[in-house]
Picture 1: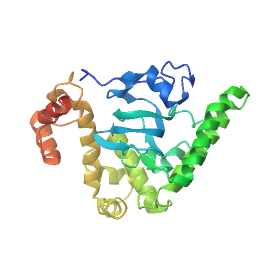
Picture 2: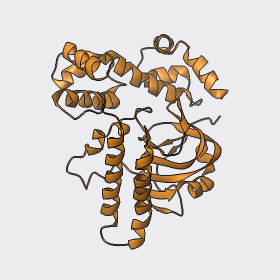
Picture 3: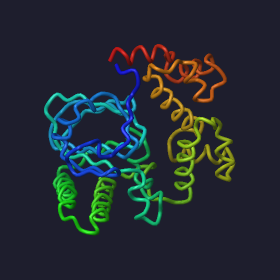
Length: 293
């Protein structure tokens, strides 16, 4: 196991496929041959898409394991830890793009947040496309590969349009659930709450602190979370804090006390108590178990 999980910052990752600092489009097989070290746990500071047209194995995203299957597309947001192990040679397509890639193009800078697979939730980020949709998805990826060869003034805008078409295709393939239902006032509040949690979970640990920022009562926030997310507001906050704790624990360069301080716990003992209550094991036990994988 590496001492620290590496974070890759350049979308292009030094590939000979089409790639700029804020974009990369490639077939997966040659990309993997060139970067086979990426099978080890790592993070990206950009959005990362993988679509499999063949191959089997496992893909681990934020400590959740998924079976790789044909017709499966993975959406990963910046900061997520992932790795894969393949049983049969995979192929497909890979697309990387920076957080700023769409900001100058869309009127709403938070437009991507409307797609549930970009909410940093590992399960939401895995979409199995139906057989009748896989051909359409593959056509879109092929178009994305060939657009740069035209070298016209609007190349990047054409890439953005095709990517948005792909996102909408995948979003329409997902069954309508409470988490990806059309936005109304309640959905909007929950979306803003989740964004705030992702930004401030280290400093703010209590639902009432978020309710104040959202200009609603703690009871109202809790009711909406139970209704739309199936869990109370406090659990949403704890889940995000726990995920970050796990990400930090697999970095063996950081001591437990240092991690506790980074996550704003009062001391090592308080952090250990929190972690064991949520997972059934101590931070040290979790770390040792991860090191043996």
